[in-house]
Amino acid sequence: MKKLILFIQIVSLFLFVIVAQAGEPDVDSLLKSSVKAYSRLNDLVCLLDKKELVHGTIRVDNDVLFKYCKPGSFYMKVQEGENKGAEMIYVSGKYDNELQVHLGARLGFFKTSINPKGYWALRNNRHPMMDADIGHLLDLALSNYKKSLNDPSASFVLAGKPVVNGMNTYWLQAKFPKDKGYYAHIIDLYIDQKTMLPVKIMAFDWDNKFLEEYSYHNIKLNVGLTPHDFDVNNPAYKF
Image 1 (cartoon, rainbow, N blue to C red):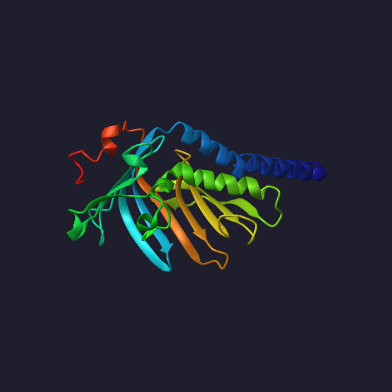
Image 2: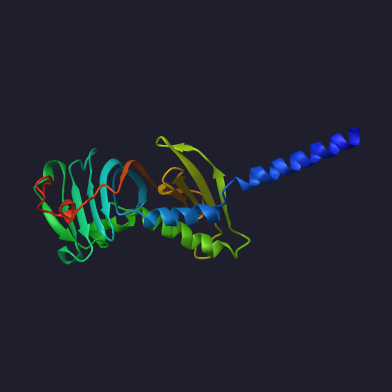
């Protein structure tokens, strides 16, 4: 009888482990779910927190109003700090594919068009405006994940389920070797468990030093943005 009870306990424990493992999502399924969720996205409005290493200096912009509409319409407004009031619009195929800018603070009257990937656009930014699309974050994670599948020196794991900006998330952490074409040494990607969309990303260089952090919060999905939301003649803007 004791042997039977012991056997039942062992089997029960074995089944419990199997069920627990089966219920835990893996990186592959999480990324696929995120791709599917992004395919259902038409537009979004949110606040964006940026922290970037730019030309050797850490630059921070918090609570930047961000509007995005597929396939390539972007609007940002800086709402605090030395650049408060600055606005930027980029629409693929419009405005000669140039970034429309008006500066904030004391230079709010100044308006110009610039190359979105040129010197002036990247003077105080690590990336062009178009990279703010969360689909870009997803593409970055996917390309590095696929590359890592055949690389035993790389890892890409589910590292936890922290709360980020009030959202329950899946934390995916990637660690990549140097000189193999990966984006960074460490990438931390956080996916909202409810929407399955990326809501935060962090990256560190080959010496584990900070590179960048982008965090999206107060997110509203598929609100019905129109071309008017990306028009410099919109009276709600200051262009």
